[in-house]
Length: 121
Length: 149
Image 1: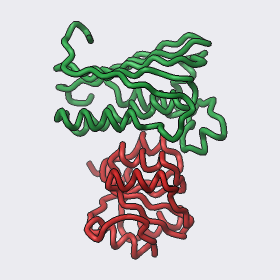
Image 2: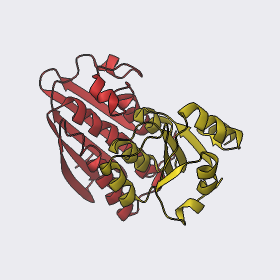
Image 3: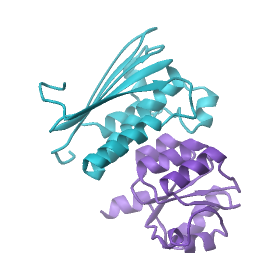
Image 4: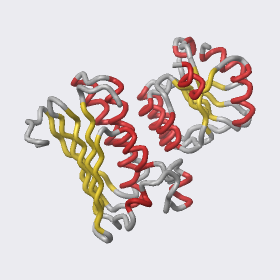
């Protein structure tokens, strides 16, 4: 699923990311506010949904090679997070939806979870 | 030097305790160095995750640490020596979910008791020792020419 499609489905605001980046394909998503969980279970190419907006959310996304971040509940990154995201080329979206609903909608539209992908392989 | 093999690359980094803003800088730098050298991406990823968790532990609990990246023809060796409170019961600290984190640490998205288990999971060999009141010593080894078990 293209990031652009994810943006549309979640009615998300693009905080940072070029038109070209919105064309990237996302295979699966993962959601957590705990960055250690993300580090333990995240896979390269993951779409990270989180309510944690500090710089560690971007740092973690970069370390696990997540393709993009969606902040939920209308949260926006602080300046430091945004600067790091720009430096690392990680697109940032923000949706007003709650985490559970955002995940549910994406799952309903066919975006797999990390565990599903692991089981398939 | 690691196991009598010659280092092809070695660099030491300083990590400051309590500096949450800079937390992760060293891991990111190491990731960039390994990428430039041309190390396999899955190995870089495991090294970056293990180093990031180790770095967060220093930032959360210790005053300071020195982290050395040694690269030999057969492995990546990360050695971390911190000055800090040390760990009283290492076996307990190695259990997933065990944590002594403060609410401030949890607000940063860490302190869920996954740090040390995550390091172990991503390493091919992991050594930890600690002296209470002095500090903690970590050795993380990741082999270059070996398929993951």
